[in-house]
Image (cartoon, rainbow, N blue to C red; front, side):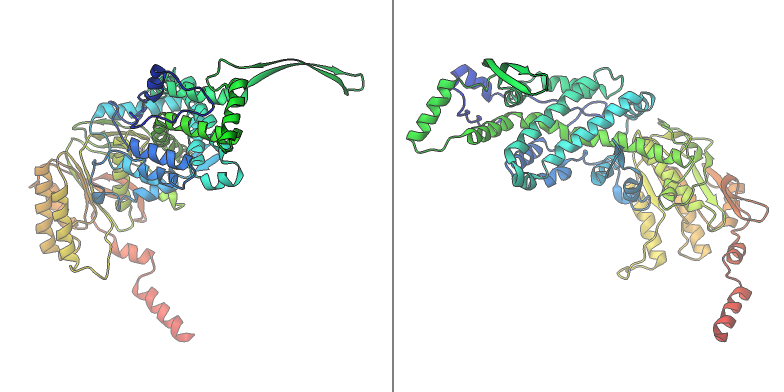
Amino acid sequence: MSQSSASPPSVARSAPAATEQAESERVEPFVVPDLLHLVPRPGFDAEGVQELLELSFLGREAADDLDAVLGAESGGWDLDSFAHDLFVRDLIREQFAVVAGGMRFPPREQFLFQVLSAPPVDAAEVRFRQAILRELEDDEDLAERAHDLYREVFRLLDMFKAPDHAAQLDLDAHRLDIFRQAKTVIDRMAGDFGAARSGLARLGEAGAAMQATRQYRRLADLLEHEGRAATVTVDVAVGADGEVKSLTLHAIREHRENPFHTPPWRRWLLRLRSALLGQRLDRKVILRRILREVFHEVSPSLVPLVQVLGHLEVYLASCAFRQRMATLGLDTCLPEVVPEAPVEAERLFNPLLAAVGTAPVPCDVVQESPRLTTLVTGPNSGGKTRLLQSLGLAQLLGQSGLWAPAARARLPLVRGLFVSLVEQETAAQAEGRLGREMLRIRRLFERTGSPSMVILDELCSGTNPSEGVEIFDLVLRLLERLGAVAFVSTHFLEHARHLRDARPVARLDFLRVATDDDLRSTYQFVDGVAETSLAAETARRLGVTFDDLAALIDRRDST
């Protein structure tokens, strides 16, 4: 990145020659270590980040917007088509918090949400992300170093968010602490990830590239000057009683090789000149000028660290999700994601249930061929909606290259996801249930391309069965024409049996809820169509029979 103007010369140093001045004005390009994409790409507003960092360094409350400018690329899947029904934000909030060094870090919800809204459409990129997670899983030391780096970057950016608090103490000391923390982060990147085999090696490459820049050397020189401006050689005589008897000063050697060193005559001349001009020139004034000048030069090198935090969090949050599920006895996997694959999932579970304290019951789902529409039937409260949610979340997380809620899975590579599970009633709705159903179907085919995954709960339940069946068949034929991978639940059991036997739609598969001897759902799914929706059994189980309700009336009247 280039700067539009030169940095002001420090008052504590002699004026550089013309060539040296040109060198001081040159800002070497910085390396942004992209951990999410096989081919690195710009993923955030670098100039905006640099401006925020510089404003914060000057003591202004500007860095609270750092999270806002930390973003993923725009585009990707249509969020309105799946995010609400899969409760993606709730999943991130409840299950994706990183724990590092015994500290729990709240997830950067918006950034993670943006990443999940744009899964890769290239299987090689999915594998690139999975390789990072596998290396973190296999190498405990590397995983610990990744968590340490995350904590250090988090601390650095957090320091930019408290300029007012720092000003109450010592703003210049706070600025030096920022420099020290920035150097710590860059040194960790260069030293801890150079031997990584996965995309994490980009952290080591970026750190080494930053260390080679003139900006980094300038930063290191300033910190060395502040911490070791001179070396003092002394002899100390200590008596038998442990008391210091004498102290002899032999030599004071100033570190003249440091660029920030100012000879004594120069310091005396500067003070005399300032006094003659009526200016106040003390160490704090000089230090403040130097700090601002150095930060103006090194701030471009700090910009990539904002993205490092976000990209690292994607992987560490996914690892945290895996660990939380493991404590519940639930296995996660990195699915095989390939074009034109049928859905295969072993011990698939719904992680949203874990967030509300309900133990998920894993089940298996296996499609025989790609681009099938699978009809799911069974009783209410039998687990159909939770199964559909599980399939959507497995596809979303798996194609994002992250740990998915299944012990093993093979998933298709799709370009979109349409999920309609939750219907919200509002006072402002202009359409009745049938009208809303029609709008849902229209929205499906407006927004969904090919290949896509489509998940629909209780299709056409908002109208009478005779009309609903006609619309139901229309949707099935169009899904086949679209070439989508589809899962559709329905209570049209008689019609589902007709579709199974007559096969008017060729690419259909059938799953039903398995029940035990007492006709209770086992939350498992087997091939076929349910014989009954077990409405009477559900009513009996929930105490909604004539006798149950009559007894309630009698008890109420007797009180």
